[in-house]
Image (cartoon, rainbow, N blue to C red; front, side, top):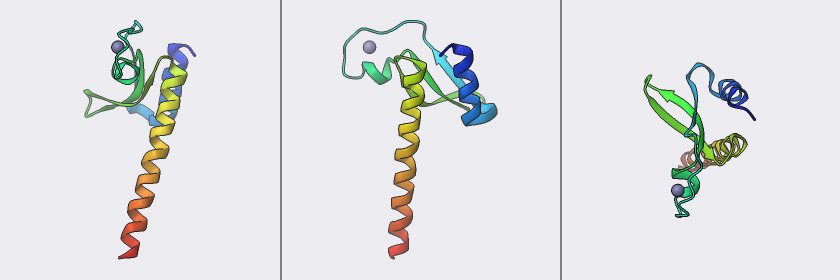
Length: 89
Ligand SMILES: [Zn+2]
């Protein structure tokens, strides 16, 4: 996936506020946090016109979007559980 494709894909998901980030180099520090905090590619949205909210990141654009999918699924699951909890009361 090229950067151009990645931006298109991001805009499909998040519309006008979509944003992508490529740091230009792959970190090889090998620390536990390397896979996410130091990930080369990140996809997400620009919040309030300046803050980049990362929805997914990884070693490739594909990996970043995959991470975004997982995050979305996890968030939806969490909301479902919250709603289910509320209905019980
Ligand atoms: Zn690193």
